[in-house]
Image 1 (tube, rainbow, N blue to C red):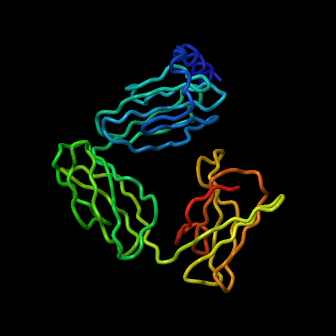
Image 2 (cartoon, rainbow, N blue to C red; image 1 turned 30 degrees about the vertical axis):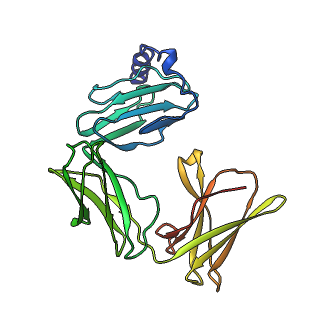
Length: 281
């Protein structure tokens, strides 16, 4: 009880963020951002490039703050819609927490090299462009590696961007390496099957028809919705394909959210293929 009172007292002594920092004017931020929902940092770990500015946005009714474990950065008290920004210069891992809710923790990984996450799966043996950013001098050569083996190289451009084309044969983790620095690994899925999905709107129900090609009976398909309350993609239904490689999901109408269908192993978690993202009608 004494510790709780001390923590609360310390927090109440924090100044509130000024009015200009208390509103996000629509919630759109350039660069990396960490939303705060209720009593959690929605993105507990984030990787950024040295020189990037991270924005914390309090989307909760509760007041919060952001304090580095080593006290290298500290926000004022953030009321609802409050913002706090901090620029990270030196590479390293920076842990932080909320003083009012000490169980709320997060960390920022700062790197000199970053590979962009793969936006879609690759096809076996087909060219695929990998892109990234570097806080390194223009002209620096970057080694693009898959599971520790160099696949190709790239050159850092004037704005720090670089790109390279690979022709993957199988799913692998890629990274970028230069001057003793390496980017966090990024998985590139290589898939030889495809999933498509269509919608049919009824009065109260929405039917989603799924097609797996080449056709495969008994395959597991999972319907995922992008839900704010789950901080991203969330599985809502799973079923098996029929003899023609097709399946159907029936759900209630009303949720105007993004959806996608995954072909998975029998565990309903190991991804084998993914449909294009679509919005429920």
